[in-house]
Image 1 (cartoon, rainbow, N blue to C red):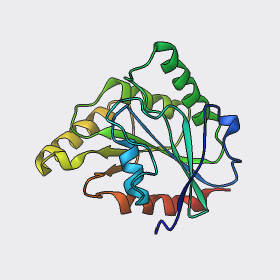
Image 2: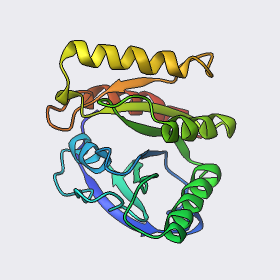
Image 3: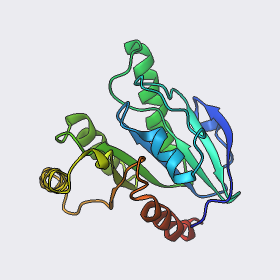
Image 4: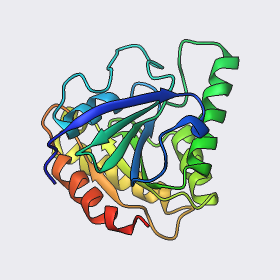
Amino acid sequence: MNIQSAEFVCSNTNYRKCPEPNKPEFAFIGRSNVGKSSLINTLTNRKGLAKTSGTPGKTQVINHFIINGAWYLVDLPGYGFAKTSLTNREKWEQMIREYLIHRTNLLTTFVLIDSRIKPQTIDLEFMSWMGNHNIPFAIAFTKTDKLTKNELHRNMVAYEKKLLESWEQIPERFITSSESGTGTMEILSYIETTIPLFE
């Protein structure tokens, strides 16, 4: 897939105010500071499309972008640690849950995982919640350029073993790096082949 255009559409805190669900949609989510905005910018080849920050919790709303005038890319708030109040975090979590459950045109949610660290309970619990609600998702391991090939392989094997403790089949997985562009074509190809499933 060739990204010819990528434009910001709107930001919302309520799924009911999101654009009409008349186009296929793909969302990106992960723990705060996992590199989500950087990956979105790399995928679209637009440096400033999604706002990046060294401060966890930068994204606090549901951001819609229209890609090639044909499908939506959605930047969701990160879950987990953020320098904000517990009340705000609870509001974010409710906003995310309602969006994921009720957004009828959402074809796949990419759950971003930091490849450098061991499996985190918060990520595993979130993916389990997704599975329990029959919400299709894929896993994108980020920051893989920070590891040697052996380290990356070891970490991937450890994660797969952990997932297989509770999953019969592991979701689609992607190895990515915003620095090198690794995984960009694979994710875009996946999106391209998934779009026809939209009815």
